[in-house]
Length: 301
Image 1: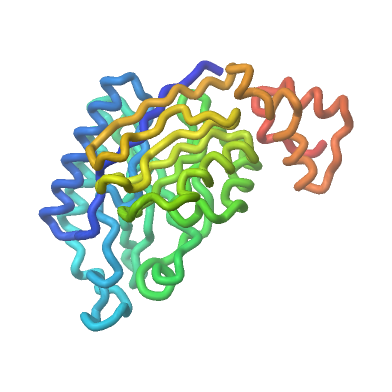
Image 2: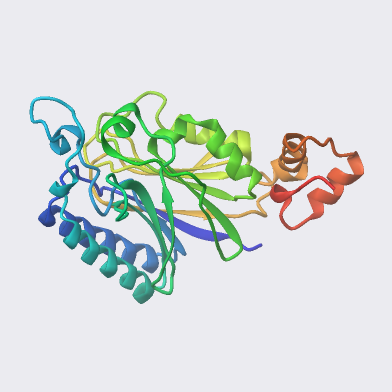
């Protein structure tokens, strides 16, 4: 399988879901998509809420004096629909896959999902990931929880989606490893100063699962967490500048890199999948799994 170039955006994000802000977010998203395509990327990852904003809990509370159930009528849904349509079309115009964070409202639900839209290079909305593990505030006052993983394929690479606080849930990444994912796209929103363990979680998941982890952070304030891509061989392929400016970061994922292939060549990924399925493979079976085109999707015989 040939290498693939991906891009991760930084410097896009707001907590105000009014029409003016959403239009500006859409413009910035499309500008960065064009830059990613010009740089040879096949896919770009944006932050949580990149298109819609990641609304502040107090701004959305129906009670101005305390955090309470969110009043989602304050979001400009009509403008968001227009900006999503323009972004989907733009993906087709520039020939780029895009994973873009946004709230997503389903008619029969009172609360929206906190979602990642998967947009294809042909200009079609082909998938959506709904954040499954919510923070206490999100689950109590703001969002509905999703109930399934999302995996899609670009040029033979399998990508999985995750969001923000799910970086603290190892089972999310273990599940994607078992599904044969090559790279997890982790979108986040946090405009506070970078915490000590921030991107360390991305590297930890990469090391323990044998997958690349692409992490998108807004980075709209100087000193905030930055976007990055962690490789399973304990390298940062790229890291953003902590200066609050819009950026596109490029990383080449090369499965034939000898350092990268350590987890496959020594049989760790196929062995883990078999063990989790209740079967201990023999040495000959491990060798066969190593030689398969997708060791990560191995299943017991």
